[in-house]
Figure (cartoon, rainbow, N blue to C red):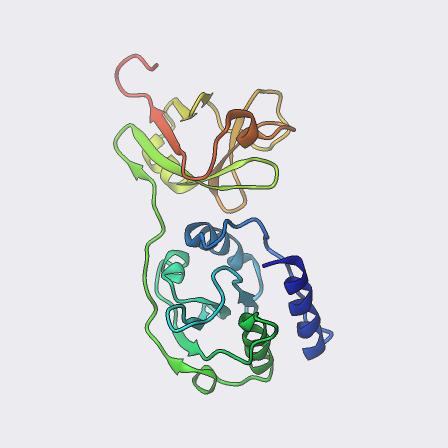
Length: 247
């Protein structure tokens, strides 16, 4: 979404009620990248209070081929494309979902009117059944890390503003496979053999589990992605010690 569209959306939302708090999550998703979109939404929405309306402005222009839906899940509301993305956000399919019909286009930006219209109706306590027709959600599973007895093979799913690499390797999986054994985390020419508690450590590169409990790889005060030309989709491998000499 370009900057003036974002400002238009915020202005119209504020017209609904000055009490509406509009929070920007990120403007760094690659165009039409449903995996990045799902990963960010999955990692952030549980931190917001129930009743929050999450507007997903990725691939959000409605058309017969790109249907926009309103989803209710765990007391939250989500508006976004029915392109399989929601199947990657939730472990269990949402409680209910309805299709939203396109609102009157505003300068070629149909999603603007659609977003504002659904927020207005939800804040007026209109039931989902009165907002749209029930629809089955398309399902695509989030790319999960692979694993064996002595390894985990994951992927860089997001590079943040600082050039830190966020992976699809969870802390739970790391502990399950690792069993407190020595390990080496490898992504291209970067190799890390310990987990840090924070970013401010004296080392060339570090690994930690972020607030979403996902493995993150970074360089203190530097851009790791730029320094090593590492991008989303690149492989991240963790090898754990076995009964043989380790490394």
